[in-house]
Amino acid sequence: MTTPAAPAAPTVPAAASSARAAARRRASALACVSLAYGLVQVAAVVPWLGLGWDESVYVSQTDPHHPAAYFSAPRSRGVSYLTAPVTWLTNDPHAVHLWLALLSAAALYAAFAVWRPLLGTARCALAAALFASLWTALLYGPQAMPNLWVALGTVTATGWLLRGAAASGRGGGERASGGRSGPGGAPAVRVRGGAGRDAGVRGGALALRGPLTASARWAWCGVALAVAGVTLLRFPDGCWLALPLGLACLAHRPLRRPAPMAALAGGLVAGAVPWIVEAYGRWGGIGARLRVSSDVQGEMGLRWAGGDAWRSVNGPLLCRPCDIDPYQPWLTWWWLLLPVLALACAVRARRGRGAVMWLPLACAVALSLPYLLALGYSAPRFFLPTYALLALPLAATALDVARGRRPYVLALCAVLALYGASQVTGFWRTLMGARHTTHRYETVAARLNKAGIRPPCLLTGAQVPPIAYAAGCASGNLAGNNKNLTPTTLRTHTSRIPVAAITAADAGPPAYARGWRPMPLPGTGLRAWVARRD
Image (cartoon, rainbow, N blue to C red; front, top):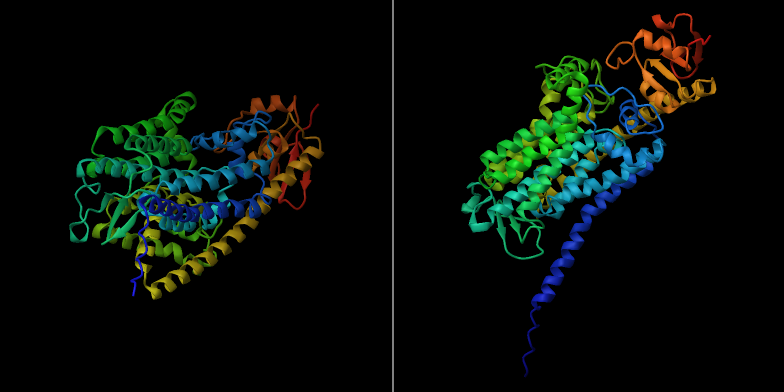
């Protein structure tokens, strides 16, 4: 009787090819999340929205066809650079939003893909899904606002810093965790051989398997570019991000070298240059601009704003003053649970996960501090960078705990379903509110154009930046945070071009507009006062 021959072992090329195919299939999960994120924006946000107040300010800075709106001290120029490729061709709000929707979907993929060698594809895909399914991330993805882009920049910067640490630590057997060990003495972050494999968790320690997709030198370039981008988008957020990253360079052994510190400092300085130059050109220095910024934002100082943040979790888009009752407070459970989950991730990091867990947690805390402890108002978008960073350790911990345990898998699915339901509710409500607001701006602008207020023209008064941009007019005010006119300048304009002041429907004319012709704007809650031209 002949013994059947044992099946031949797969050859090395065949095994490597199979591993690469499996890696491609796993990588498609993150691509699917990013594609879905872009499609939801294109289908549910782009067709509905015009430009909001802040959007019209940012977009007008690079629009050669319209006058630029007043650019106040707290703003940074990064968003204007993002929209410039479109605004040079057209000022159609839908074109601007479509461009940003596609760009944000690509940026979501690029930001979380940086973490694939550190966490593995499944964890990165879940983290990206947790962040992308937030109603704030969906609503602001196609909008010309800085917070979402800051969020993706912080994810990118922290990921490249950790990849640079791992690439540095693998030479000579140096531990990338800075000496911290997991259970059984295993290093918290270590590199193993085997090409084409994703990161995995064994014995409570994160093992980075296989060669990195970029050397440490390229990782430091990634850090510099990401930090520069964040700082260019929002100067204060760039400084708050640099704080924990700088401390990591001092505390984490693989980062205690000149290259990562130089990359961090160089990125911060490069991104801050436009802000600093403008500070000296328009306000007389950095200190003066910071003081003006504080005044515009309601005199920033040490105060607890966590209550304001909680009340505005489900909207309104800007809570100033935030003396409202929270909308459907039972839907804010996920927000109240975040500190508990973050603490659980921090405990798990102490048990062996190392810098891959604690660095995004530290950055998330740092970026939330000014909005929890300094501002006297709140907006849901302020915390987008914190949510993006927290999504990474939360996704990793959730999958680690649920792996191979059916009850935990079912519990995780239930929690994710409840989370999704709460976000859908918030998304639809705020989308309809934003649609109503931007439609009102466009309606007022169209009626002003029809009444003869056409370019070149000037609008002053309440809510004028978005209305003026939609009408093709310049905007200006004699008082307030957007003051950029004097009474003499205004009188000169009224003798040369059409000028109108916008007020509430039940308000009288401003002092400078007494004697101007009233123009009702029914259905908008506003009224125009048109200057008489002799």
